[in-house]
Length: 130
Image (tube, rainbow, N blue to C red; front, side):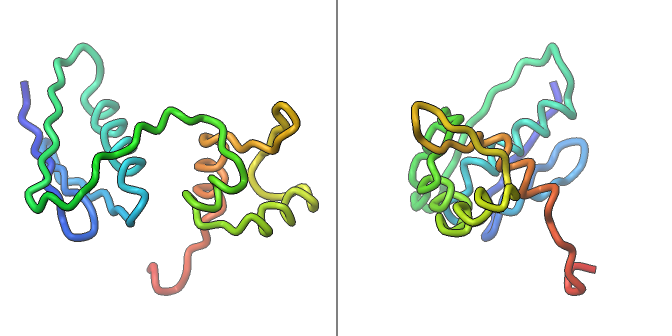
């Protein structure tokens, strides 16, 4: 079994194994970044592997990550997690733009997968990113 090392960095995580990968994280988004990181590692390694995961927080400052089992988010939850104002979401719904939305039991809900896809597909590259 190959050894993979996951090291916390000031603004993300560095994964060293067959190569070095950097996963940039922002406050409040670490659990999602770790999920993406583990998904990528599993994809790179393939199937039929024995995997053991240990999480080390040397500074003791990182609170336990919340389990991201919630698949459907309210506009308020979207605003809190993604930083998009509820008013902006409402405007997008009125103009039939933005991420897909569903009405469930009389309430507006966004599927997490739809949000992630929308924000990834609609990234704008700025001059500073060259």
